[in-house]
Image (cartoon, rainbow, N blue to C red; front, side):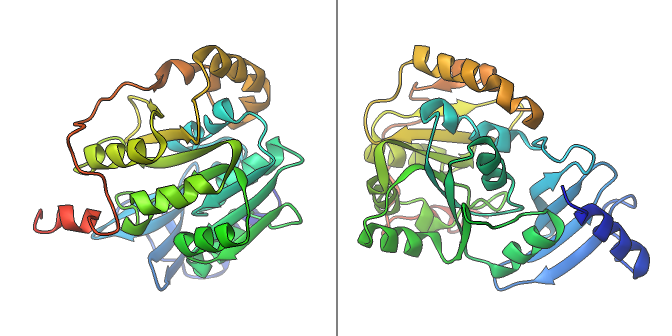
Length: 301
């Protein structure tokens, strides 16, 4: 990394910085109320974290270890790299949701010929990623300040295609409802190049689990459900066509293991956790633009 962390430390020393009331050993380096979130950058004893406030609490969006900046701190971020088991050598990737920029940065480092489009609705998040998390745009990594649904519609109109689409617009306990519907997922599926895949970071447990699972099955048919006992997230891996067989997935994991070592991704453990078993109530109704999470959650508090 560049001197981002040194800059952050200088800021911390040079000015009065608010103290996180939850823990005395954490300091808030940046607080901002954007159009969409209360954004916090918190200096913790072993990591620097981007957080969004959620009700009376905060949820981590991205964290980095200043002493080992390549290492992926969160399990769900490591799980998203399992997309490379389905599409091992993507040339074009669309990432919906920037956070601190961990995923697009890692993918660009791992795949020197890759072109990445990142869609982020909140310009304040982009600025924080640049300032505190060393996220850098270049001739291969571009950021588009736009709603992901709008971007996908316009990309279809322009005839764009992607080998891999990563859906990571996840605030910790909420995914925007218009990014969960069958209509949106069908538009996303139509963006895929032949042999392409969608990787979605979503809920391991929630009131929407059954409905969401049925929605993905409606649009894609059979998909891989990647779950790890230590994570509250799951990653859905879906393709516009047959899934690769497990032998191919295992071979891809072995091929990627050396390169993923510095990122602390246990890639060879994922094939056995990628299941196509229907572990949800398949009688539940898929989510649509007319039948959304808001309908399901109304009155549930």
